[in-house]
Image (cartoon, rainbow, N blue to C red; front, side, top):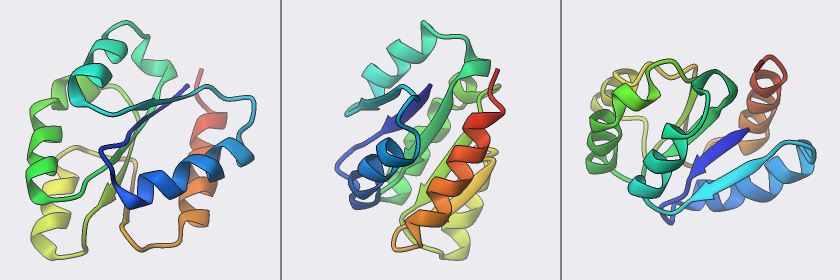
Length: 121
């Protein structure tokens, strides 16, 4: 299963159809809020979920960090709002398996997600 936190992020909006096209047999659940994502992830086996977090700002990255324990054993793909050194430092504190940024090639991101999804138990 792939969980996508979509808080009106443009990259996340563009990513959804690409993921559905590339991984039609994979459950893709979209969450519009942190509480909804947190509640659903608490119900699942962490080893079977790939989480995509798309941050619009440094504040959102900080909010993701507050949920870090929830993501501890879960593979994370992180979409950063920019490539400033401080943003990258904040993002790496989440220990993502893959980092991209807004405006980057989404086809590369979809390919990485497809490969990561293939090795989930």
